[in-house]
Length: 352
Image (cartoon, rainbow, N blue to C red; front, side):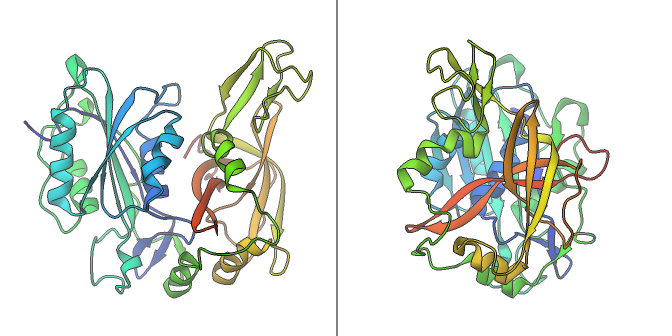
């Protein structure tokens, strides 16, 4: 079987930071967040991801994936791990395409972070640099062929981009992502400082924004998936979810409501300078300087306070549109905590 014969939508993600002409992951990105961002792009905004039954991972992923993808999707999912490299990527696609699971969706995710291995830019790994790719695979009559096998290439990202740029039947397979980006035009990064900020002691003790792990896990539908409570009694949408309507206090008649992940409007903006941050973000400020915080209207009447990711030196203007992406927040109790951050969209862009 052609290993990409059942791929009906591909998504890709390249980070906004650059070093030595190649894309590098930001201090708040790892293989998990890269893969989640690519995975979000294999669904149309109106679609549900509830039918995903399998996720095949290609590359070196942190332990959080063992439960993290289920939390990201909002339901149990079977996770299969494959080593890194093009051969493993091809094998993962073959395994997903062979799966006898009817209409159940399968997602193949590959993420690469070559710079995190300590190599100088341009000496090892992908010519693209850091990034991720996702393939949504369906069985049955809806399967579509891409027309080619995965080509041999120095890395999975190079192979995926080569397959995309030379595909013989572009109308039959949908794509969404950043393959058109190059190493030019991104935010210049001091790679050594990024690496230092990316590997802080995981045993950090909070002095500011501490959230106990049970409460953190309980709030993941809101933190990761932007799920609000919609009240059938008064129509109010409560975010983050609290188990009771913020208006009429009713606990009955609440139903989950998925807020848009992209296109939110900034209604307030500020910058947090050195010394003003909670201690959890000391490493981030040391590596990348002050960071922005914005109040975003995600939907009419529903607002969220989000840290700005990949921002520059200026405050985000009121009225700017942002996308939200899952990023690392801070290390705590032996693991990274994750949550949504805002990424400012270019003028005229509707989504990320």
